Image 1 (cartoon, rainbow, N blue to C red):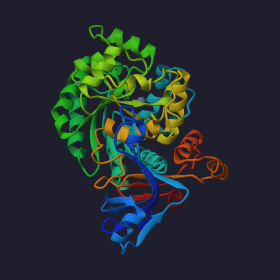
Image 2: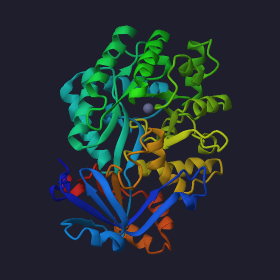
Image 3: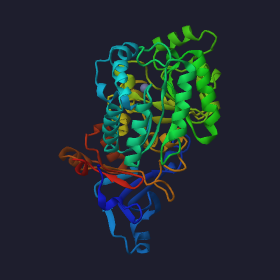
Image 4: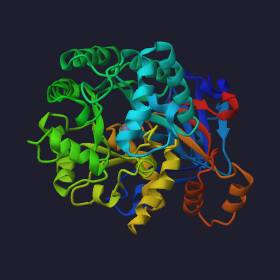
Length: 450
Ligand SMILES: [Zn+2]
């Protein structure tokens, strides 16, 4: 296990010390500087996986004279643990497969790979490998697709439980337009199995369940109808809905053919009761104004997956549309492994900046870091417990390393403030940008993982 036993003591008190930044509000809706809290030298006191205190070291250190374990970071920045709002752990092995179009890529690489997850052994091997990769890159909360089979769901929840990570996942519902080996035998059976898995995993430790129709084209209307019923039945218990939406023009035309009575792609999900709080849609690149309105009105969240959109050439997410103050839509970042090419949410921010610049819409570093942390937590309706460095919150932290290599260390010396340093680090996104990750207070580092 990639943990440092010294800092893992769940019953004792530990602490992390160093420069830190966190958010108090949404910088797309309020003046940016008012949304940020910066500590020159924070002491973050952790007990039982939660932050029991945080302030400037000089102010609160005297309250904790007996602190035996303090991880001190210099030339670093402690930020809330990253939130990945959309990825497919089952596609870990096909990252970097020659793209072509979305639909061709699915048929050629994705579907054959996903059939391997009927094996519990293979599923748990990849689940562990995936979670270790994202943990070492600062991600402490992830909203993940499994695939058709129950073992693919059990494996990811089991692996997350072992690591103290919060994962939202569930069985993928797909009863048409996928190869037979992946296809659900019937809409009824598939949703029954999803409910069984929901009852097994939802709320167990940090694990949360999602009802996951892959996307409208791979479900019959009957399956979407039953999926909508399942989501509504457990919505108040905190169950999620997770799917894809408006990724590429060709896909949108296909949805219009399959669902001719629906006014738009978003309207398909709305009609079947699949929109609402804790409904999260990946991509949303080609979205009509009335669809944004529906997403806003129903309280849905969306995941911006820039490296995937660039890699598969689907479209470009327009954050200025999503976050329009007139009708803002909850927005977080998604790596979308394996259409995405980046296991790191921080790395995705670099791509998000470039995608904005194509349309002359620069994404400020404050807004950018917000999307990866508190914005993601708000998108997943978890902002009462993660996404901030705040008393009472889960001790989910990422430590960015301003001297992770010689060039970065020298480059940082050219910067005059923390935001310049952070923007340069984001843009360069070196492979070792994250020095350590704390998931509910459990520490992960590359050194310990070797
Ligand atoms: Zn996806």
